Image (tube, helix red, strand yellow):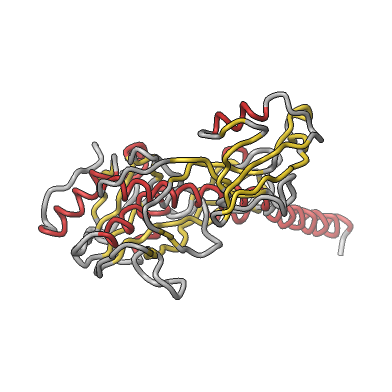
Length: 351
């Protein structure tokens, strides 16, 4: 073999090696794919997802399913091959990593924040459903999650009701910020909480915030909560978090507490956050969630108004309708209309 032939083969081999290596190199993107759907009227965890104690409930039929997405975790990488493969699929989105995660985000931080959002979502959903039924609910501030490596680890717990902080009565999240004003990292903050109907005073040695070493933090997430006239719980798999199931939680709670079947015995799906006033807010991954709902046999998919433009680009099956959900009350009205007449004209996203 001539020297030129050997050189040519070596160059081809080197090029091939470079192509293979490049294909495996991580790229600054994450993928968003359809995830599982969960029936909040069912018993996917072995027990009813909606549990009520202290008030009569009513049997119902059909399914109310919330949808999820599967997202690349902060500490995982997407290769060039994986990104190109995802780009070629209609049901998977490829998103810049910086648009999805803060620069210093970790798997642990994301799981903790997601769990906190889930707690707030469940509480707000229960409050909205009960307000729709005419209940007046006093509100307070609770711990929605404790950072695994934060100052309050082992001291505070999720769903501790915060009564006061450094002598300041806590009625809102703004009160917590006011009470921490002037506290320096390393100083002890005195927190009075109610846990299991018992009032406790707990001293927390504060730490410096990661993004501001002069700011003292407790290492907790907080959110609004309400005193309910009876116990309402929503049990979902621990691996699922975030705020986007709020609307579906509220519909399931309402259906459980009212006579008849809100769904007319059919499969209903959707996504949307919910605030204490009952307004439905935007969520991420709407196209992937619509794709995930297809396999569940859903006949209706509720879409928040802010997600309409993106949802209209999806390709749902003909038997599934994309129904606009601006508020909890409007979603209930749509379901009641649909239960009576599946061919009725329901609110749609504007084209």
